Amino acid sequence: MAASFNRVILIGNLTRDVELRYTGSQLAVTDINLAVNDKRKNQAGEWIDEVSYVDITLWGRTAEIAAEYLAKGSPVFIEGRLKQDSWEKDGKKNYKLKVVGERLQLIGSKGGGGGGRPQGGSNYDESEFSGGGGEYEPAGGPPAQRSSAPARAPQATQPPPDEIPF
Figure: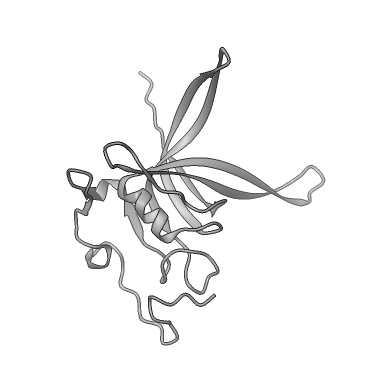
């Protein structure tokens, strides 16, 4: 019996700003595009950069976090699964492979030139959020109160959280 496994892990930069929208049942959703860079040697032995663009859909609180903290150019870690969309246009069947993002990690920092939170980012996993009626509450409390992330030593030159120095 054959088993299957559908997992995607990507690190890249957003190609455009996040546009958040809501479904009829008030569930947040956004479609983002990620540029993923790869360096490889060509036949002549020279290093070349190859860029792949990946369409990703984020749902619920994960989509809201992305809209709040990410902008064009922001570095981000995405974990999710592949999903094939299909539609018919002019009598022709079309297909597109996308990623449904289930976990988002902000990896930019204030001093790092990208978006996101200071101190290396924060984890947001859709499975950590639960609630009814369109409201999402963290299952383990706010991210700062969860004990899953190691404590970091404060830096003396760090600006206050509300200021972005660029």
